[in-house]
Length: 148
Image (cartoon, rainbow, N blue to C red; front, side):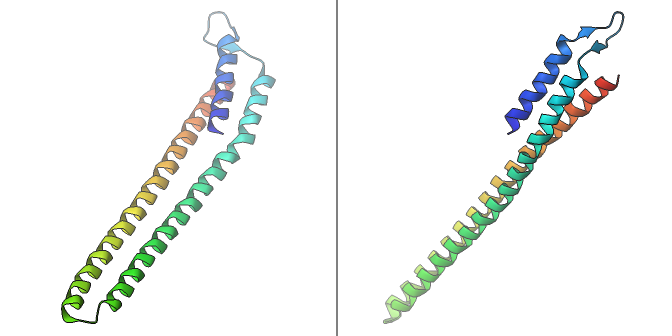
């Protein structure tokens, strides 16, 4: 994936570094076909990165849905427990306190899971975006060098 693309970019750099230098200038003579072949491979591999970003987005949605389902289950269990304890006044009072505690805990857990999932997905998307930006910058620099 990204490592393959980085290796291909390293190959381009090697070709440029090992190219024949033009006397009295900073220009280098290289085999253009060799560079074009590598750029073509990069183009082929780039869509994988885009697919990976889409997968990350879908995974984030799945994690959020799972967190919501878990929160709903915990809340439902708390409500059932509360109904069972409504038989006596003292038990009812304790049950209400327990239900509120469980509900609060469930909501806090769901919120933490949601926030964690969002942060995880955002970090992965940010890293992928930065990698793609670097690749584009390197490609642009290499194209500028090729054009002279």
